[in-house]
Image (cartoon, rainbow, N blue to C red; front, top):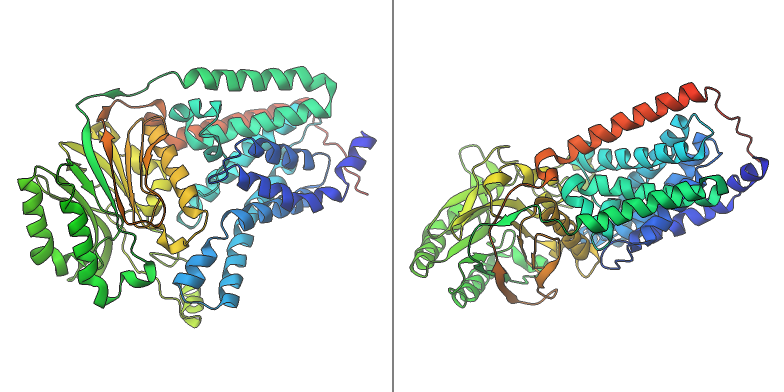
Length: 510
């Protein structure tokens, strides 16, 4: 044990932690080195062995700095390039953003060591795997309206672990990924646990490969011809009043070239005006034309309730069916400001003006296009699985409209597309994803991209989808069931380990 203590307390763990954090980022799109996520978590769990909880907190924080500095630094583009903040202001805010989220891996380390009351390595590692995912869930679902970016499970969409997605979703897959890393650590830590660790990994990954052969949903109709319009309007030009007529004409012209499509989708806030300003003279004539060509339009346009002075980020359908969906899950610091009045005061000081939207009702009727109802999400909403589960039994496909022009030529559009792929796989539905500058794409029920438009090109992506029915196990149970089960197993494991090994090992740091 003395040898392990000296190894665990080596200062190289702290020096290496940020670098290994970058390895986790490399497992996500656009790099897609999926297996580096295993190495990153294995390093992290190994670094938490035989040390104090304070030391584990430090190593988790340094690891988190590496992850988020390399993985979400694209917020700099939205603050500096689009928000007109100075370079110093943008760097300061981006750094604060990175530091804040880096505290979550730190929290996972601290809690893991506090709860790991046993000297049995497999049990300690099991606890760390569970805590890691529970902290991811807190970050992704509960705090600040949720920031479910760079969740480990997303990195496994192209590995055998993807077979588990329709059953247990992104958090469940993240737990199995963490268990894989734990098995590797256990194998290297002691020969006694080597066979147990390797057999566990083999079982998890083999079963995942088998599950990929199962179809959880089924086709209910003929193929639907679709067209996704990518206008490629520069963000700094989009809302200029002198460009409005030109923008509307662009989308109208691109749409008229594809009246042979049954469903045509425009990206988020494609129309740079409120619905009431363009409805009578522009949208209604367009709707009539869509009816004549037996097409349906799915268009995103901001809506304003003049009586209540409330603004909504909305999607409407035109053609044979008319309806409206108002965005429910707003983007913190983008569409509303949490931590008021502090956040508003800071942003006003540096002259960053953000949208002030109102969330739509929690329950809204499904929109319909192409003869079938579909689930609608706007931008950031596709990061939340529950948005797609509500009403899914009556929906034949999914639609996401977004605008990633805010983040320039960064890795964010690729990460966002990866998240959308997870939602398609979780629900067993096709997804139509229309974006302003990319990545516009059609995602199949197995989470694969069947067609994709290039970034920063004005184009229309055409293709086919088929309407689907049936519910995957995950669509029935959702994230909460996975998290409740994991929390229950964690409590049982900790309780048993406490009674089996009541005395916590003494930690001596050098």
